[in-house]
Length: 210
Image (cartoon, rainbow, N blue to C red; front, side, top):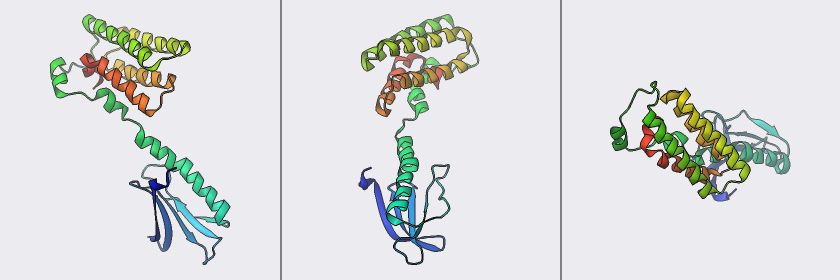
């Protein structure tokens, strides 16, 4: 990891003790160390956990500064810092899929989501599904196996128009877009791109995804 992501400070009081603390910048994540009895080898440490509120763990004793404590620090980087960074880098899927202007919502109205689709709406959505398929192939160059998987998911999405109301179909549509991103093994940036394309193509029926 880039060292510039972190800051370090000595003499930080946590409870009744003074610690040397490494902090992930602009985050609540901390790894705190204090010596045991003035020893250069023995120490106590606690660290933020990857849980709701990122609470500090209880203190753990280590008897070897260079190996044992170093291993604990690497585990913290892998098990706490890395998933935290991945989490904040992940796009808000609901925002990407449902974000639209008030003008669009006013133009299309806000029908009762428990109602079924009209024949005109079904036709419009099926055309959008076909357009979405073409965009995926042109922009992401999937393999034959990936195209087969994509087609199966889009076929299910199209057939779901006959079986589900607007509310239920909304969930299926969102899950389909996310599942296609996973099938394509897209990274975070590519996944965001896929969802943006989904949103653009379905612009005329976005009220279904609000």
